[in-house]
Image (cartoon, rainbow, N blue to C red):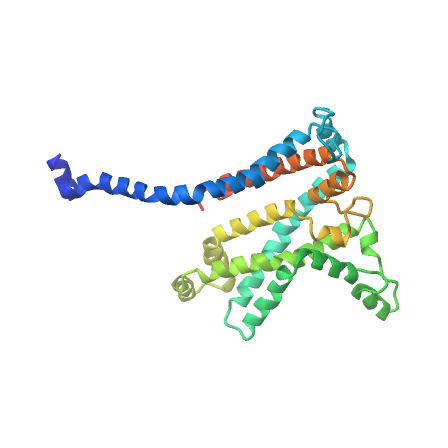
Length: 311
């Protein structure tokens, strides 16, 4: 024992006191756990675990939400979901939102973040302007853009009328409505990702960038070889938020299009609301909620396990 302690360079008293210190720390944490953990677990159970369990249970019933569910139908609600063309369309739309968010929204946010973090005049003002759409409530943003896209009185209509042209009704055209929605989504949420990238850029050690300048690296080489690798964890986090947020999109779609025309702009959450809540098919809506939950959890945990395991 003495030889082992001497070999490690620690005194016998220090080596023997470490277990006591560890036990003292554990005992010191118990009052905090006892005081704060039960209320948190109670709230999480009441508002998260129990509703999830109830939704899973109701999904096996044909139930309109009144009284207690009695008509057991097994897996028929789930079979009906995947036979619905509107659900398949909502699934494709969510995939397109994720694709646009990753391929357009995130790169745009990164580019603007690199611009406004430079020491240029008015950089703070531009940060504020770019971030304002995200601060705006989703419902308000949807209503604003509904008037902007209006083919008679909106901004788009005025631009077309200025040139003597008939304005299109994009939100009433099932072939163009979702493209218009995608434009609003990029405008609304790129500011959030931009602020993430600004925080990441400000955390980069300036001496690393100065060393790249001394070595004669161009702006693109410095961004590709230095800045982007150092922003790796921020980029992965931004993509994670983009994916999860795209699956939860609801507040902006309802005032903008309501899922129409002809269900062309439905997302998974608006499909749940339109075909479950509004039609008083709570059992069917619960089944949609379970499917959405499984998709979200699968994507979130898979992404974190594959891409964010070292972050």
